[in-house]
Image (cartoon, rainbow, N blue to C red):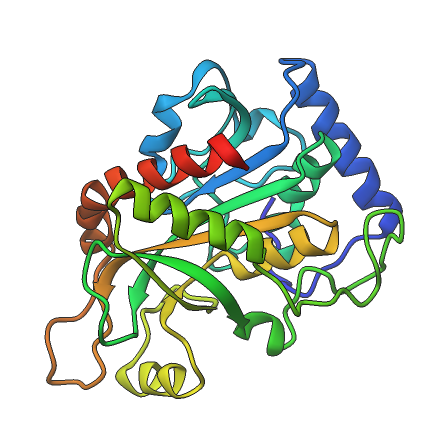
Amino acid sequence: MMHTNNFHTVSAEDMRQMIDEAAASIRAKTNKQFRTFIVLGSGLGGLGELVENAVKISYGDIPHFAQSTVAGHKGQLIIGDLFGKPVMLMQGRFHFYEGHPLWQIAVPVRVARALGAENFIVTNAAGGINRTFKVADVMLITDQINLIGMAGNNPLIGPNDESIGPRFPAMTQTYDKDFQELALKVAKESGVELKQGVYVGLAGPCFESPAELRFLRAIGADSVGMSTTNEVAVARHCGMRVLGFSGITNVAVLSADEGVPPTHEEVMEAAPKLAPKLTALVRGVLQEM
C-alpha cells in the first residue's frame, strides 16, 4: 500500500503486532537461529548468492514488508549460512523516495531484532564527497548525518514502545567502535584499502546539486546516499551493534562544469568492482564478530 503522507505513524500496539506477524511468517519457513542481520545496497546483492542452505523469501510474502522497486535490489530475504555463519540478509532494501513511510522502512530491522539479531551490517552505494575517494573504494562508516531525520522525518517519530527501546535513544556511538577496529584489521589482512568517513543520508531521488554537495562537504560528510541512516537509527534504538560500509560508486561533482552528471547506471557499473572487496571484508568480520 502506498502512503502519500510520509509523516504517517502507527501505534505502539500496531507496530508490535506487525513485528510479531512478520516474524511468525518468517519462522514458519525456517527455524534457523542467527545473530547477524545484513542489508545489501544498490548493486551489492551478489553477496546474497554466496549464502548456503539458503531459505529465500520474497518481500511480497512477508506481512508488512514494503516492496523494493529499484534496479539492483532483488527484493528478497535470505536466511542461511554465509561463510559458515548463520545470517539473515536483505537482498535489496526499501527507500524513502519510493513513497514508503519511514516506520515501514524500519520494519525489517525491528523484525530481525525480534528474531534474535544482535549485530547489524549495513551496506550502501554512495557518492564520494571526500576528494581523496575514487570509484570502487570502500568506506568504513565511522559516523552519520541523518539529514532526513534532522529535517523532521525520523522513523522513531510517533508512539514509543519502551519494551523495544527508549524514547530518546543516544546516537553518540552510532557505529560500534569494536566492530570498526575489527573491520580495519580484516582489511589490512585481506589487502583491501579501507577508507573511513562520515556518511550523510538524504531523501532522494534527485542526485545532489553541486551547491548541495559543497554544503554537505562543509558540514563534514565524506560520502552521500539515499538510505542507511534511518535503518541505523532504528537498529540503535532497539540495542543492535552496527557496522557500516559505503561502496563509492561515483565521485561527487562539486561544480556544474566539472565532470559528468551521476546516473544510476554508473552506480550499477561500479558494483562488480566493489563486490570482491566487500566480500573479503564481510567474510573476515563474520568470522570474528
